[in-house]
Length: 167
Image (cartoon, rainbow, N blue to C red):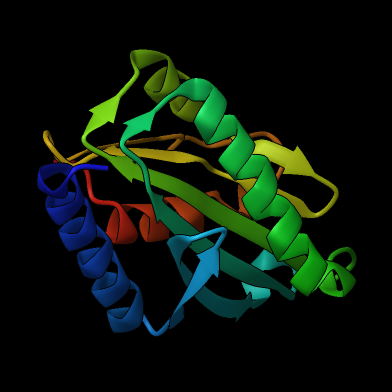
């Protein structure tokens, strides 16, 4: 990655960490194979969610070029990471949601299209991938109301908009 691409990406990731902290998330950075990855976590319980607790993770990493394949791979890796840590909490009365985000200066239109077409679903876990183009401020992600997990839709949209605002 060249320095000119790294500076705006790092600035965006720093800002995302600040937005996560401001919303009450636990935030840390981990090394994933030499890449610093921002990880945010919060748990919310609401009676209107049929008395369930939702564990929400935000995992964001820098990328020079965000492709659909890279975003799909990162989403799968981030989902596996989250389920390994919170897997025992899935199921009855608990859910897991994840915003896996790749942040870069070049976004393949196919990556944006894939991110906006829907959420990725596993048993009691959903992922809403995000492709962030720091050159335009665009954060492409699914912000709709899915059939599965509809009770969390407004909450997830609100958090997604807070952490990855649309320019």
